[in-house]
Structures are given as structure tokens and as C-alpha cells.
Image (cartoon, rainbow, N blue to C red):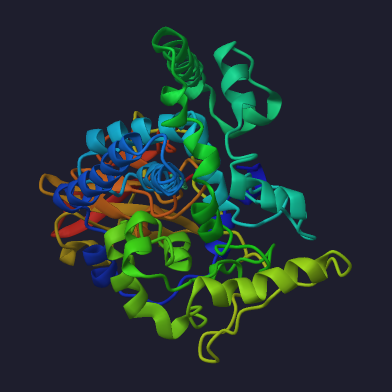
Length: 454
Ligand code: FES
């Protein structure tokens, strides 16, 4: 994040939805995650066996196409586990994340940082690393991924495996993660080398056909869906409704696509797991542009837009927003004075104790925002009492008071990073710098926040 972007996440438009509704929607479930994941891998393995049995017959073409297509949807499983919302248990998210990232051909640590950046700067050109092609759309760059070209990016994995971290990657990935990124890149290269070696050992190309080659011959349908998400829409605006496209798909596609047809909802509220996106859509759809009735309807717009952009660089589609919910103002809000993010002065005695009037009535395991002298704080209530820290997340400045408490940690609403509420320590990336904490005491029945005013 750039130093002057502390309030960038405040600039994004968010649909109205109550905190209670959001709390219900963001609940994760190991059972739902496992049911979906096991069924997904069941279909993948079943298609793999089927394809193996028909090798040498004309049926092998559709069979491998079907296998490769499902294989490429592992990209979307990797994406969901980037956010750690598929399962309630973090270890399950991480395990599936690493497996799906390996299958997809991506190193998971680097890719997760890149994806966090995509969420901070979605289609803000020059800052978003996941823009497929800025305007005017470059047709070869757009067409390549349909055939798997340009999806796997071996450059960063090879560089990182050899300990080379280019300046742009140093800016993206914090130093605390360099070592693990280097070692996981080495592990990845070793894994891919083993696949290659197994082809020679067993005298068959099948290990490659079932893994990395599938990223090419199965890429068409997943890419067809991916390109509906942003291509041809606005860019450089702080309103996901203008830069994301929601497209209705059939239930089978929705299953493999991990509900990413609700793309606007996902970008606006990334803490909501895939299985709750439909419910979220029902609650806020009156605030969104109409959903495209089908992929075909989306391409009826995308293809002419891309073609027209070849001569008219500025041309793009602006989705129709409901009159009652106009576009977000594009000026940055006036930045408030912020509590310094990385400085922890908890060892000093506070010299002011400020009353936090609403804190008394807070439910346990909740958080509220408190402002004092132009600074903002997140006040927490856990089973053992009250706690406080700066409100701006030390990763990219989201307001932690808009997140939710999970097992004594606050989950950041922007990129799902987490902090220990009692100590301020970062517990899950992309959070990595400790938050500044403040003491709290109860005095005359009032909750008071200890500050260090001059
Ligand atoms: S702003 Fe990224 S984890 Fe908080």
C-alpha cells in the first residue's frame, strides 16, 4: 500500500446492509466447505478415471475436455481459500489452498498477496496486478487464456526459488514473508520437476496430461466465465457495481465456479463465503445493476465493446445503477488524523482516560468504532472484558470496527487478515504488522479508554 493510500478502502462504495445480517452471512462452515470440496474432487477424480478408460477412442477428446475444465476450476477453489472463507478451520483452508494453488500452477504466498492488492485496488489501473488487460483491451492477451496461454506465470516462481525478489515483488510482499515464499517456490519447482520426471520413469505423458497440461486444454470455459467479471466495464472508479459484472449461470456451473457469478458481492464483501453469496445478493440486489441473464448476454456486450475499444480507447460500458443508489463520489474522503499504526506505546502509562459511552451495552465478542480528537479506535468486548486498538488495519488501512470477532481475533473486513484482540499481534496474513493497543478500565460503571494525549 502506498503511504498516501491510508483511506483508500474508505473510498469504495458499500451497499447498505445491517451488521446483524452481515454477521450471519459471514459465518463459515467446515461442513458446507467439505461437502462442496469433496463433491468437487469426486467429480474431478471420476472424470479422470473415465478419461483414462476411453484413451485411444474418440471419446477421449470430450472426456479430457470435461476433466480439464473441472481441473481449471481449481483456480476458483484456490481463490476462495485465498480469502480463507471456504472452511471455518484455518488449517483446512490452508491445506486446500496449497493443494489447489499447486494444481493451478501458482505459488500460494505470492499469489495471495497479489490477490489482496487486487481487492484493494480493483481495476485502478497501474495498481491492480490482476487486470487482464487495461483499455483498450488487447485482443491476443484476452484470447490467450482461453487456451491456457498466459495463465501460468513461471517467472516469479523461478525467480523466488533462486532467491531473486524483483523490486515490484518486494513492494507487494512484506519482508516477513520472503523466506517462506522462497522456500515454497522451491517446493513448487521440485513438485513440478517430479511430475516431469515421473513421465520419463513411467514412460508416459499422462502425469503431465492430468496436471499442468490440463491448465491449457481445459481453460476455455473457466476463462469464458472469468472474462465476464470485469472486461469492458469502467475502471479507475471506487464503486464495484461499475467494475464488476454479475452474470446468471446454471446451478452446475455455479457449483464449479464457486458462486463467483456474484462477483460484485464478492468484491464488496470479501468476508462472505461462497455459499452465502446468493443470500447476500437477495438482500442487496435492489442496490445493484441488474444481473446479466446469461453468459451469452454478457458477451453480446463484451465483444462489441472490446472491438470498439480498438479505435475508441475510452469506450466502455457503464452499468445502470438504481436511481436510489447512485455511484459513489469519486473524491477521496477527507482523511482524518490517524493514530500511528506501527507505534506501540502500551508500556507507557496513559495520561487521559476517556469515557466510551456505547461500550457498556456492547454484546460480548463484538467491536465498535470510537472517535476522540480526530483519531479512531476499535473497542472490543470479549468474555474476559474490554480491549482496544487503533481502528485502521496495519495492512491497508481498513476499519477494523467494520470486521467481526472470531475466536478472540478481529478479522479485517477488507482482506480477511486477523489480529489478536488482546495483544494486537497479527495472526493471519495479509495482516503482518502488530496493531497499536490501548488500555481500558472500568471506572464508576463506565468503560474508559486510556490515551496518551499531550
Ligand atoms: S486492510 Fe488488508 S488485512 Fe486489513
